[in-house]
Image 1 (cartoon, rainbow, N blue to C red):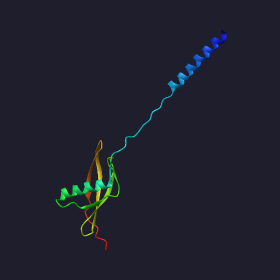
Image 2 (cartoon, rainbow, N blue to C red):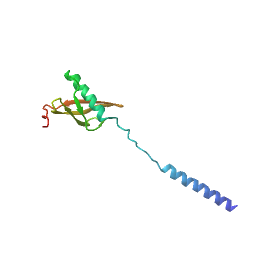
Image 3 (cartoon, helix red, strand yellow):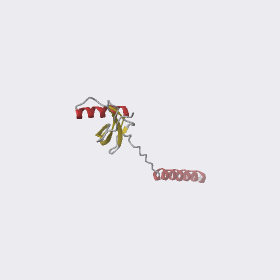
Image 4 (cartoon, one colour):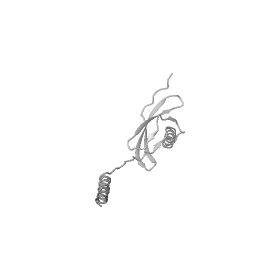
Length: 117
């Protein structure tokens, strides 16, 4: 009978020790929600449309070098190329993000660079 009591006591102590280990451990995983992104091509199209609407002129030829990540304050520089080959820098700055919607401001430089010869 002493063997049965020792086995039972050992089992109870083992269960308590395992329970204490499980209760004493915790884990947390933080997964950062991915930020929305606007492709460089789509950004160029939207910038061209905004500039055309603002100036009342046809959509200019715009090229953007990179995707725009939807984080307030992120910026990128696009390039407007005129019919005569001159270029104008255009700054794009994220002003707000609402879910997957990226809102941004567009500002063209004051002076253009002449066409390359």
